[in-house]
Amino acid sequence: MRQRFLAMENLNVIVIDWHAGAHKFYPEAVANTRVVGAVVAKFIQTVQDNFQADPHQFHVIGHSLGSHVAGYIGKRTDNLGRITGLDPAGPLFEDTDVDVRLDPSDAIFVDCIHSDGLPIYDLGTPHAWGDIDFYPNGASDQPGCPKPVSDVSCSHHRAISYFLETLQQNQTCQFQAYPCSTFKDYLKGSCTSCGDGPCPVLGYRSIDSHRKGKYYLKTNSQSPFCMKRK
Image (cartoon, rainbow, N blue to C red; front, side):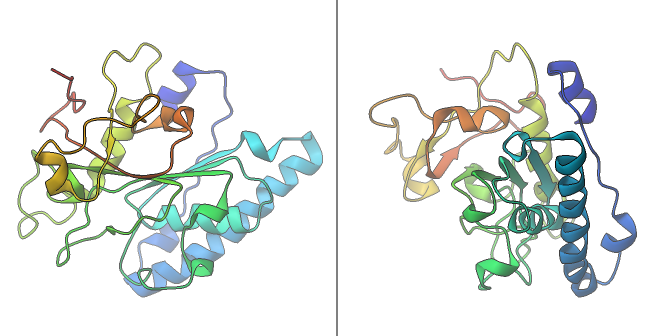
């Protein structure tokens, strides 16, 4: 992801390595997200104080527990520009107050990609925690992934692959998504437009549409995952 960002635009990319805190018994790793968020927020404040960095230009991206780290960063950083949650972790965050999980108030724009929201084996969540939430393949078993009983993480990590595919200067295929009540309705063909204006696209350019709400789409089972419209 770092390499693709640098090849695409003139950016400063900062990578947070918190594996020592993440590779713990899950409840302990959950608790560590708050600590990591506080440390990174302090770093951002230092960059603002010393280099006059504009918080609007910061885009924080996190996967799973990292999505909630991003939320804690936003809670401590006024006017943070954007947070992208890649399949935000669900266990121990669902049915909690917005103060302890990612939510739309954590940045000016919060987008989430939900790829693993099954009710039993889910590592992510089906709940909408962003300004705009994308549900590729209904956030269920992702095409090309084995059943959760044999591989519980494939669908959970697929959100990263989808986002990575959007980090291209001349992207010819767009992950176009449509508003719908349920994925079943989407599959029935009941949701084929966004009214006045273009539909949003999943990934890096989702901010361009200024849309909000839940959006559904289908993907291919292998790379390239973007499914071209017929």
